[in-house]
Each structure stands twice: as C-alpha cells, then as structure tokens.
Image (cartoon, rainbow, N blue to C red; front, side, top):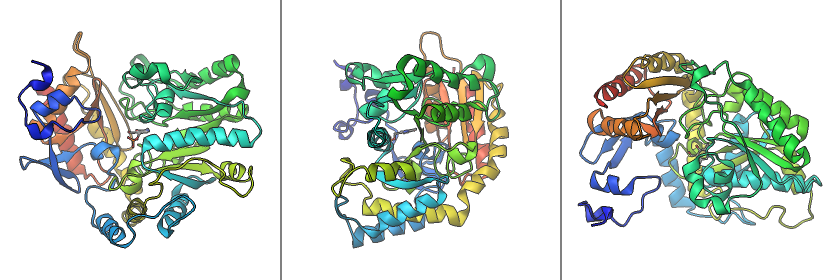
Length: 444
Ligand SMILES: Cc1ncc(COP(=O)(O)O)c(C=O)c1O
C-alpha cells in the first residue's frame, strides 16, 4: 500500500496542494470555509483567530465590505481588458495611488499577479536597465542565504531556502552569489526589535565585488525583514550598509517587500521604516488585501526613463503578463489603499507594535522556546528542535493550535511565525499569545 492510499475523502484527491504535506493533510484536513475581520471559520463551524493574516497578506482583515463591493462592481463592468498595447483606467489610477505611498523617487509601477512574478520582473528590469545604460555585462545577481523570493526560477536562484532550490539545482540562474544571513542566536537571542549585532554581515558584498568585479553585478535583492524563512530582523545599520555599498559600486538594490509592504512594520513600506530607499520594491499580497491576486514591481523614475528612452517607438521592454493590472485586481487595490488610508491602518499597526512586542516576549520561558524576535506586527518564536526530527515540534504546535486552540499560526522549520491582520485588538493579541503558550505547554 502506498502512503497515498491511506484512508481519506476521495473528494480531496484531485487537488495537488502547494507547499503542503499532501498525504498528511488529506488524512486529517484543515478546511476554511469563510472569513470575517480577524477570524476564519472552519468546516466544522469553529471560529479560528487568524494569527497570520492568511499568508501575511490580509492586512485589513477579512472580507472587508468596501473591497468586496469594488471587486463585484468591477466584475460586472469590465471583466477583462488586454494590458498589451491597450489599457483601462483603474490600473493607471492604482499605479498613481501606489506612487503616493511609496518612498520618494520610487514612482513607476509594473503590474503582475504574484510576488514571484514581481521578483522575476524586477530581475529582468535590472538587466534591461543596465543594457540601456550601456553596461550589458552587468548580469549577476546577489541574494542572501535564507531569503525567500517566490518560486520562479529567478526567485529560487536569488533565494536562499535550500529545499526550494535543491531539486532544481541543475537549472538555476548561473550567475548568482549569496550574502550570509543575519541570524545568530549566540548574539541576537530575545532581541526586541532590531538586534544590535550583525551590521558587518553586509560587508560580505565587498568580497563578492572583489571576486566578480563590480561591473558584472546587476542587482542585490533582499527582504528588508526576512519573513518566510522564519522572521529574521535586520541588525541595526545593516540595510544602510548594503545601500552604501550598492551606491559605491553602481549596483541596483531591490527590496522584496511582498510581506513587509502595506503596513506590516507600521509604515507603508519597510523602506520608510528603516529610512533606506532601494531602487526597486517588489510587492504583492497586501496590495489588494489578498482579495484578488496581484503583484507589482515599483521602480525609481530613472530606471523607467532609462529603459523607455533607450529605444525608438516600438515596445521598449519585452515582458508582461496577460493579467498585468487585471481590472478586478486594480479595483481591489484601489479599494484596499482607500481603506488603509481611511482607517489609518499603518499608523494603527505602529501604535500596536509596543503592545505586541511585550505580549510576544512574554513567551520567553514557555516550553521549548529558544528565541523570540519581533518588529512591527511580526514575531518569530523559535523552538528547540527535537533530536533528529527538525521541524516536527513546530508543526505539531501548528496542528494543535488549529484543532485545539482555534488559532491559525504559520511555521517554518521549528519557528512559529506570527503576523496577524493589522486590525488586531489588544485583547486579541493577548488571546493569541495565550493560545500559543497553551499549545506549547501541550506539545512534547
Ligand atoms: C518576500 C517574498 N517574496 C516573494 C514571495 C512570493 O509571493 P507569491 O507567493 O505571491 O508568488 C513571497 C511569498 O510569501 C515573499 O514572502
């Protein structure tokens, strides 16, 4: 009998689930059937507190009426408009509205449908820019170990999460180097906010430049705060150093803000939180409050101008997606940005961050906890791994949280990542932390 033949509902068989232990899931499924504000409802009728904003994306809370209505209106008015050599008003309006909250100087927007596509678009834009500048030999990319940049071949090549790359190692982009990651519990355990140690790790870029030659490197891409790998907060001064080194060597700096964009740290983007402006910002998720898939690569005016003006009257950049700026996504994006502005969502997250910090750090001393780290409304709770079975302890806690605590958390390895919708209340923060603690107390 193969493991897939374990008894399970045949209605679940046809779907090949992404980033999921399919066999285990189908034996004991976790199904969500509806959602409102801070809660999901499970198929057995339980209210599940959303500790992860879905997948770091439902920043304004679930099924918000203005977004739902905007999508319905768009679906009934303009279901689709080609984005190649044609346009429709909402995508232009959304680009302009995004420009209004992006850091100064980042003022042009290329739409796609996901974070992965936003990243691959950014890598291509970097190459197109250098070609337009007369430096076509700048083709190399620098990512960072433990970085997550989606699942396209570009994204996994610059990314640094081994299981995502290993099976495909024979066909990754060939000219990529990686900076070291910044995680070191011997220096940074239980740091509140940005850890003091580690800015010097950015200097590894100097060695890469020395080895490869500055004139061969197109761009450095990092998450300003690494999320998917298990919440790694940048050390004080680290991003500033990366920015200075990129400037010194004519290398573009890309911040992948698919998670940190739209208020997660209490500012529109992490770039503003850290006062470091990159040359490009990739976004997705919170741009539409996740109600319709959308990604975007946001670039400095000089990048757009250089690429656009390097050619004659024809198509300047041979890249795009059928659904770039899709009318439903654009409508959702416009309604979402309006909602964030009307409710002061980002400022609210900033105001709640100290409450959050105090609450999550109260888990220090709970069973198995070897680190707690936080920034904005994000926290990573790192657990001691079981001997020979890494990842199983956090996974068991995740399953227990779902079935027994009515709480959705996310885990990577033995790290529990918490990133609730930004509308979470103080009472709900307390509830969330209490549920995590209870779960850890029952997990062996
Ligand atoms: C930083 C970062 N980049 C890219 C992605 C990929 O986004 P998507 O899953 O929409 O392709 C993610 C997804 O979590 C992410 O966190």
